[in-house]
Length: 197
Image (cartoon, rainbow, N blue to C red; front, top):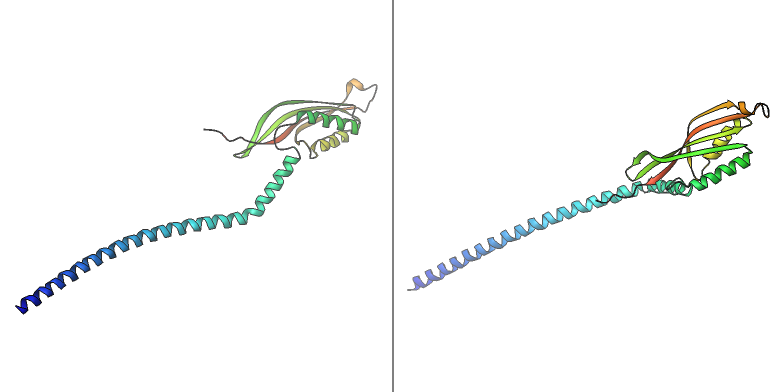
């Protein structure tokens, strides 16, 4: 009888031990699964942190160049080279140069604006072809006139071609008079508005 009672206790202890072992293995498996999930989340967060750190370091390296580019863009905007053309201001500017240089005749004609190039996706270079006709006392006056037109202010001027010839209509009055004719491009930089889908 004692043997049976001891055997029962031994079997009960053995079953309890096996049950606890199974429960322990189950907990261990669940813990390992949770550890794997947590490790994957940690690795993903660490990779994202590394990407952000790399971008931040790159931005810090590029900051001086970006600052210089922004200052240059602001200067171009201040000089009137960014945005819409200021055609009325341009006409006034030509009148002031004509008066200051004492040029007897300055006529100009502006063609409609056209796309000249697109250096970056959001920036468009536009140009208006300008035909300039002047009566001069000396060919050097044309060089000075073009330099005055190209001074920073309201335009970036790109000369295409110029020609000089003696003014045959005015030979009797002023035998040294010269007629100058130039084709110029008046260039502006425009911000392209974002396209809407």
